[in-house]
View 1 (tube, rainbow, N blue to C red):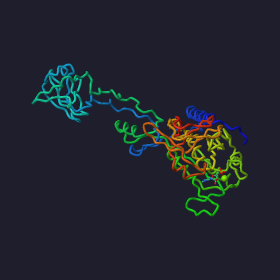
View 2: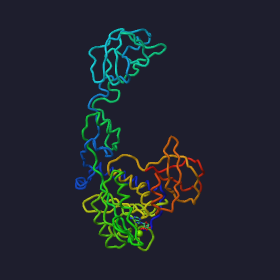
View 3: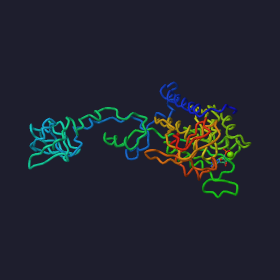
View 4: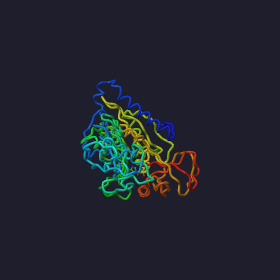
Length: 424
Ligand code: AMP
Ligand code: MG
């Protein structure tokens, strides 16, 4: 396919447009047959303890007000602020611990001892800290010159959430905070989106599987395990297919075997070489191509398209260049956002950050470059480029934790400049 080279942002826009179209398809049940076949509406039930990393399919609602009672945020004394601010001794008439319900209201001129997390008795409007108090037998005072404002150290009932409030909408990937909130609301299990099935097909005559001993000119297939790891961490379910040689018939067969997946990733065989047969095989399978080549390095030959299949929505695919770092970068840039969308995950991908460059970079402008780099993610992140032998240098890749992004117009980046990094 002799299609023009897109810029990185044009290619990202194409993927984004595809994602928007997907969302529209799932909203308009135009074709009842396709609707019934569409897997995006299905829901799985995950136990709370193993729901981390999954995408919420049904929203989380508060089962009661949070906090369910006015909660003291300190160990100290529940008081009326106006009385405490006289700094006079007040009568210590009661106490309430976390988990207890106050037996009565706070009387005039009185304070109650109270613990963090305990319900504040009626009548009290503030809690002064034990550290700021002086106790003398049954009397306590707020030590001058300290004063306290009404409401201080109390979270009012319902300030965090009201019963029935939608606290987390569907489409949110569950991290520790969302799991804690689900636990607070009494969910022992959660409705989550199914993981999209991602078929991974590595191609190349030179490849042997990891368990085999490579001949003198053969190499082990490292892309399939790498992509499986990338797919898993992006929320997909990897399905690693057998490696295919650079031959038409096995390629055709492998592609037609992959049609039941939600996304297909093919690596290798898309450059200009005489044995790069993947695009032709995709064409024979009826592919529609959205792009074939992006002005990036590594990863320039990357192809994005979809394959028709009977009675089902078309299968989106990416054909990724065979060089391992090219495959990884193009997965992160283009496949990960689509994979997230297929799994109903609303997280915008890819993620970029800023860091100060330690060292400098010089090179030819024209391509958006993604250079393996190491970032110290401290308060002021500092990134340095990892020396590498090009996009086949897996050892260098394994020493990196991000990619430095070189904009297409740059011929030089000076030491200490603020640069963009592609986050894992
Ligand atoms: P290709 O994209 O097929 O031209 O391959 C580019 C380079 O990546 C070649 O050096 C291949 O040997 C290497 N390569 C291709 N596929 C894989 C793979 N699955 N695992 C490791 N290296 C690969
Ligand atoms: Mg090849």
